Amino acid sequence: MRSNHIAISTLINAPAQKVWDAIADWESQGKWMLQTKVILKTEISEGVGVKIEAFTGPLHRLYPRIKSPGLVDLMEITHWDPPHRCDVIHYGKILKGSGTFEVIALDSSHSTFHWSEEVIAPWPLFMLAKPFLWVGVKISLARFARLLE
Image (cartoon, rainbow, N blue to C red; front, side):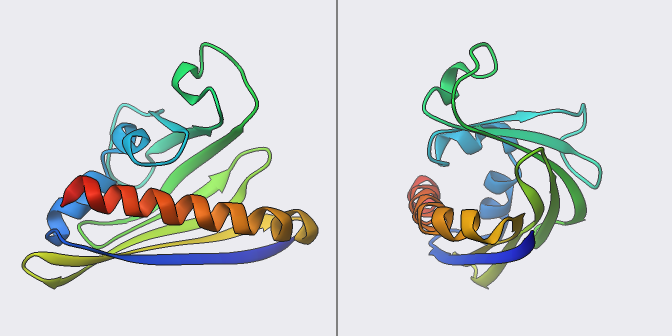
């Protein structure tokens, strides 16, 4: 297994704090992440130590009541610097690695959102999945930007 990198950035016509607040509202991420439901697994919702479970699959709206094909992504926040940066570690059975969300204010009403992941997976599997992952994240970030504008 080896580490594989993916990174995508998008310009958002919204102030950095508004972008951050929407990113850090974990359970509402399903509004913009393709076929994903996010569940907060800790009583606290922000800061180091917060645990999040994201399920991506065709029956995501019914998860966890109905188990269906898909990916369970277990994450824990390891770095918390609002409204600028959040780092997570992925510690699930299939998806391992780390991820970073960064929000950069360009001016009072525009921001750039950077999403990056270091995925630890068998190289052939990652290379097969990477185009779909990239397209899915790109579409999700475009939806996110439209939601905030």
